Image (cartoon, rainbow over the protein chains, first blue to last red):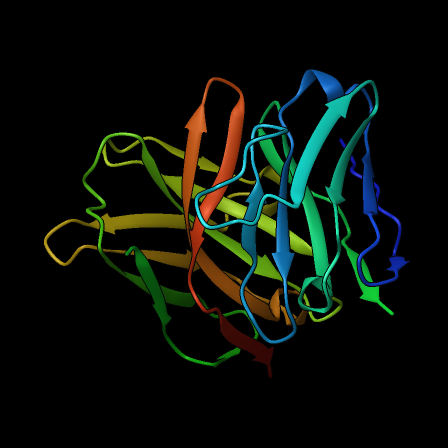
Length: 106
Length: 122
């Protein structure tokens, strides 16, 4: 079965750039989406179709996808960006989620 | 503004059927291009897609659930439901309803409910 792999945790200083990767076999041939989940809240879509931002998502969130990895980049990271982030893709018959990455803004 | 709200029992006995309903406001479940889905999140935080139903009657379910799942739509009430049969403790999770968008091979969830914790025990 298809798997998406994320690092369990990433740390970043306020104002710096955070990058969260999502690895999967030929992931670049699929569309990747990203969700932010703050403690006790539901997931929120922050990137879809690799690079697109939904209305209301700050411009500091961006995405890319090629080869075997998709990347979520947060530029000028703010304390409010501290959360769990999940990647997601579709493989033949099933929607797959990555295991999640906890972003800590120190 | 699209809003989704789950409702149903917070506790289900082992081997019985888990049933949840999602009430949708701000959008019609009878609309072209929107798929109505369920996703669950285990206590250890992993997310698992359960399945979706489209207003035409088309459905897709996660093969891992092996025929235990059914999703239905009630357009008169603008809500949709999940039935998961023969539950075990492994089905304990927070269950989210969500609106799914599908275009070519792009699948994503643009609106989510607040989630409903369901505990399975004997």
